[in-house]
Image (cartoon, rainbow, N blue to C red; front, side):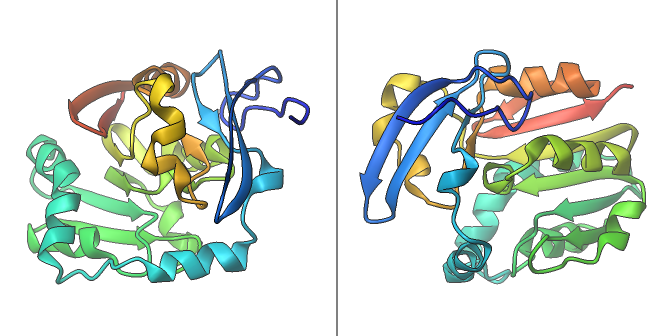
Length: 219
């Protein structure tokens, strides 16, 4: 077991060792933070960027795939009713097949898209939005603290941020949890983590569906 790393979300320097895996993807260590409740993989176990992108390209994110659209609708179906007519949004971390952005447009909303690897035009981050979506993205972030600050700057006061990610609700099941076996998944959130983020950023957190958090920016 290596020396304890710094939490990438709250910067606490005393995370505890949680788990060590050794499978076909190699050895990884996982730590947990007592301050913000994040579980995470230290940088020394992260995939090289090129290998990470190659894995993303293996995902079947076809906007025409009915099952994939149903999966994304877990978030969109609870976020859309909260949005006033004429709202504009950003799909942050849309991936190579921006299916959610297409669904949002089909429902009559203007939406921009941004992805670090596939749609890297940062001018999309210079605008302000009524809502931002972030589906199956936050678990991949190497620097979630910095990303959340970027999102905050792009979100209007009173705006909504919808996040969908596998939630770590039971630490005892972590070794068998399939979500942590994806080598591109390096950060794992709980409701307590989301509440910590809300208090830090000035966002009110709600949990309207499994693995879905809706934040409202109130300051």
